[in-house]
Image (cartoon, rainbow, N blue to C red; front, side, top):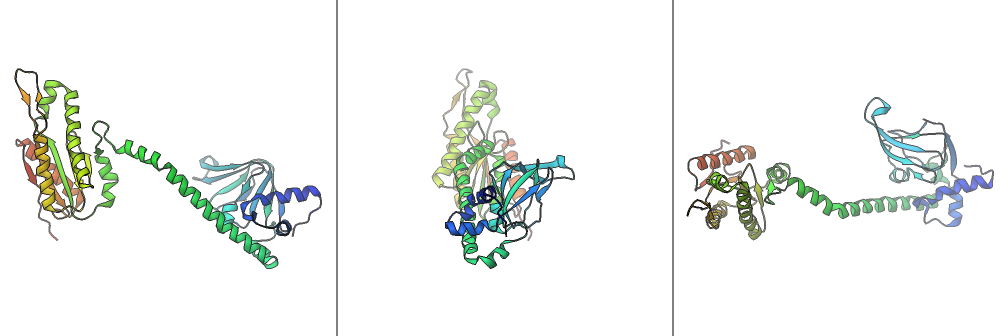
Length: 337
């Protein structure tokens, strides 16, 4: 047990009571806790704790500085600093509350004094043998503190979700059309593939005629109109993703979609593209009328491998388009089981 030799000693030792672990103790109980508090001195460069050491103590920094870091390599130059503590800070209360092992180093940056509970020669089990009721209250506070920290972290995540979602959108959204990029399909949707998923791909026909006559701005405006058609389909369905693949190839991916619905969506998309207002090309009375080449298929019915299915549907789209386009074709492939 700690020996208190002066009023200053008592004042220093009692500072550790500001930890929330002791927050609901009565005055007499706090006095009993102080009897089990001690002091230690660290020289510059000396470690307070290291990875694998049991978190048997709570520390309060009286003077000096402590940095907590993780080592990535063999040298100190490879250390990543996690936190830095200054006089008055509590160190290790969360680890103590969880009865955890440290996974980092804590180093004194200069000669440093700390108060700790329990004192250096004891652990919590020793204290529990002498003041079991108080230790029970301390352990209950520990549980409350851990729960509170978890809730705070969860709330912080929730508060940040809108920002994270906005960043996510900026990364994966095609800025010209507002469609999801193919990277979104590969990085996110692919992780949650479900059976009976319809992939419908669209490539506008004779698009080069429009761009050559009126420039890329006209092509961009046309892509926005096509994107609107795709978004309308997913909006009406209440599910699915409208995507931009490569160049001016776009499409939709719809989960839990049977072949009859997929075919209906593909044909409806072809009709919607054909109904887009024609664009005057500026050469006399010549106008550009929209049509599209569409391929569609159902995964995994037509190909067990998603990657093979995707490439097969894309290749079918391109082959049909090169052959003249303005068709709706289905991707089929026999799969040996």
